[in-house]
Amino acid sequence: MNPRLVLPLVISGAILTATAASAQQAPPQRASGPVEVNGIAAKVNGRVITKNQVSFMLAPVFAQLATQFPRRGAQFEAKFKETKANIIQELIDRQIILDEFKQLGASIKPNLIDEEIKRQMRELYNGDELKFREELKRSRMTMEGYREMTREKMVVQAMRAQQFSDAPPPLPNEIEKEYSEIKPSLRDVTKDVITFQKIFIPASDPQNPLATPETQLALSEDVARQLAEGKDFTELAKGYSKDAFAESGGLQENVPRTDLSPEFAAIIFDAPVGKVAGPLLDPQGFTLVKPIKIVLGPAPPLDDKIRELVEQRVSKKKTSAQYERWIESKRKRAIIDIKA
Image 1 (tube, one colour):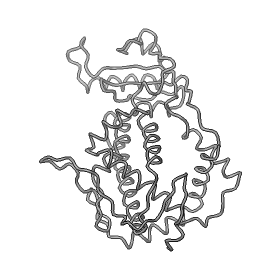
Image 2: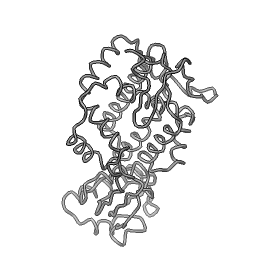
Image 3: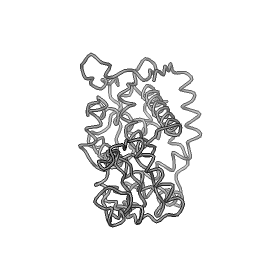
Image 4: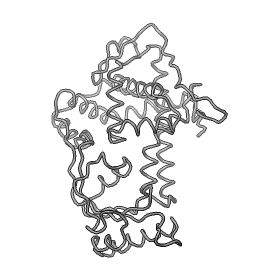
């Protein structure tokens, strides 16, 4: 590819420029200590993809799967394994593309990286910056390291768009259709509100010294079976639930999404209204939830900024087959060693 074609490159307001400086990037900072804190997940042409990078990207998915499948089991393992493999492949492809353009010294304005990180915090952590930073700490990743990951992702998105810039321009009806499909995902999720009924069964029961987490999980599964057979949720909540809402049939009204844990919210806001979700793993026990009413946060209008995003998505779909052929050819030529 002729480097001149990339000057200037404007994607979603991110201006990528070529500089004379080398594109070699410093790796994320590592914590010190006698244990392995940042092992190698894979290598691409000698460049390292760390386990910390994979771990942090996996964290929201793992939390949601662990909540959804209290017993873990085969379905949990299959979904987790598939997600982990996809994340590693994404990071491998990202490095391949970065290597293609490393001589350009691509860069993105810092404020655009900040905006993208805020968007990810909003979508994955309900806008809770503290929880986001706690997850960074658990994954032994610095904010500087995460910013670098985000920068690379944005560079790759822009480079991919430039690589296939000869795609047919999106038609007005294609833009409207795509916007309609992705509009819910563009909303401000921190403004989501839900009314639901809940049955909470604690992992231990002070009134029953023989109760264990295992027997309590079995009890919650039995309650789920009774609900599936048509038993009344309100009556079962009054009989089994052990929280402050039991007497009202487990009803909780107009609860902001931000009052719920991100993994719990991700499940119940996607659950069909009137259908029971659970038993779900709760930090203190097991929960069954029936959404009654869901009010989603406002979605942005189709202004110039959103239109540009939608146009990119349409173009990406049009060139997906072409891109897969291109990236597969690059994979075959790359030296890839997957260790995790």
